[in-house]
Structure formats: structure tokens, C-alpha cells
Image 1 (cartoon, helix red, strand yellow):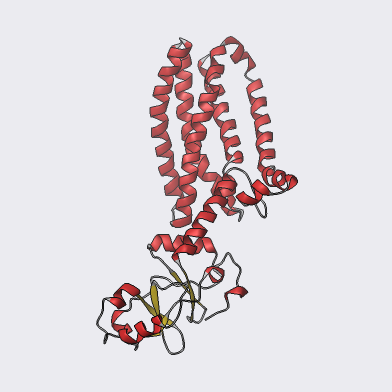
Image 2 (cartoon, rainbow, N blue to C red):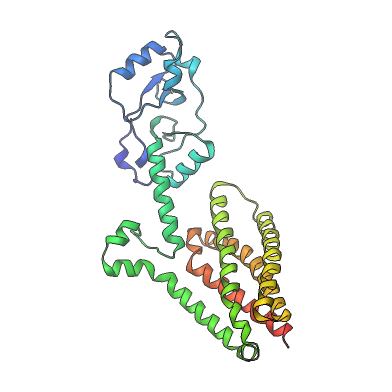
Length: 325
């Protein structure tokens, strides 16, 4: 077995347990039962089958061994591993493969195929939880070394501020840009004060659709091989359909609230356009981050929200200026 301490803790080698039972393909069920009864194991879900030079060739679930005749050999019972990863593989890749293949453990081998250990179910669950928290923090615009939720809650004041500030500065800059855009339409607002009623509606709905699209895209891109053009076209049509439905409902509501069919048309058309754009933009932002070799989760949260707000409100005022001349 390998010394796991030589590997980074966030890799397959760092996560693996080495106290798992191994046997040779010629061993019988009775021999394996005797083997596993003589030692305390870190995990005993599978018996890993290796050659004389310790290369992994198969595995046998413990339940199969207990239900089989004592004279059966491991060669009769073993199944080929669906996957085996080398120790330097990142922990997120380990979890993704375990979920994709629906397996309880991921065997770890060296570059010569020799068995080193296995990443077991409780480790996979721990990593899944840790990665979820990390993505949650990043989607909130929190970043930096040590940006763990407990560290942020209990850490020093300046450390917490430093972890939370970077994308908020970007969001502030774009927000000021949004204020500048709004000031350019001061005349339209003065003539049609009812336009101000619906600014939060346009921004909120567009942001919500964008958040949905981005969350789905980031997870899908992590697990699946996507054709980006096809996916973006699909998202465009999804956004368009959602935009038509919400645009009609929002337009009717706008007409009733503002007592103006024309204002309702502005709201309806703006919702349709803003939702359609947000659905696609929410996918393009993480693509850009990936192209820059950055974590795509960093493209969500304050940055994408600010950009979506800028675009959706700009659309709203442009539609208003054209229809309310």
C-alpha cells in the first residue's frame, strides 16, 4: 500500500484509504473470508483483486463473497472496475466520476496500474459537501485562499473583509454605470413616472432567469461534454419561451397597475428581451472564465448579476424611449 501522506489532501491520493482488503484472483471464497476476519479494516465494501505484481484487475463486493460457495475463486466472482484514477487527480474529479458512474468507491492506482487504495463513500460525501460550500461562497462573490465558511464566520475581521470585497468592487462599478444609463433617460421618467414602478421587476426577473441558467450550465459543463453552440442555442430558445410567457403576464399586470396599455407593452417587450438575453449571458460568462483558466463559479454572483442588471435596465429604457416618443 502507498503512503497517502505524500499526496495533497485535496487529491485522490490524499483522500484514499489504504486499509481495504485485497486478494489474488486465484484465492477462494473461504480464503478471503479467513483473510478479512483476521484484521480490522478502514472499509470493507469491496475486496480488490490484484495480480502477483499488485496490479488491479477487478473487485468483488463483500455481499457476493458471503453469498457464494466456499470453493469459488475471486476470478469467478470479480467484476472489472468501471474506473481507476491516479493519485494526483483533483478531488472534484473523483466525486464527479463517482456520481457519473453511480459507484460507491473509486480505486486509486499508480501510473503502472498498481493498486494504492480507494476513495470510499464517506470521503466522497465529505468532498461533495465541501465542494458545494465552496461553490456557494464563490457564487456569492467570496473568494481567496482559506475562504471556508467556518473560517469566514470565526476568522479575523480583515480576513473576512478581504475575502468578500473583490467582486463587490466590480459590482459597484457596474452599478454606477447603471445609474449613469438611468440618468440618460431622465426625460422619459419625468414624462412617464410609471416607468419607475417596473424597474425592480425587470431587474429581478432577468436576474432570476440568469441565475437558473448559470447554475444548470456550470454543473452540466462540469459533468457532461457539451457542444457549446448547441447548448447556447437551446438556452436561447428556452429563454425566449420563458420571456414570452412572463412578458405577456407582466405586460398585462403593467397595464393594470399603470392604467396604460402602452406602459404594459413596454414592460412586456422589455421582459421578453431581458429574459432572453440573461439566459444566454448567464452561460457565456462562465465560458469566458473557463477560457481564461479561471474557475467558472467565479463568474456568478455579484459580477454576473451586475452585468445582467445593466443590460436588462438598458433594454427597458431603450424600449420605453422607442414606444413612448
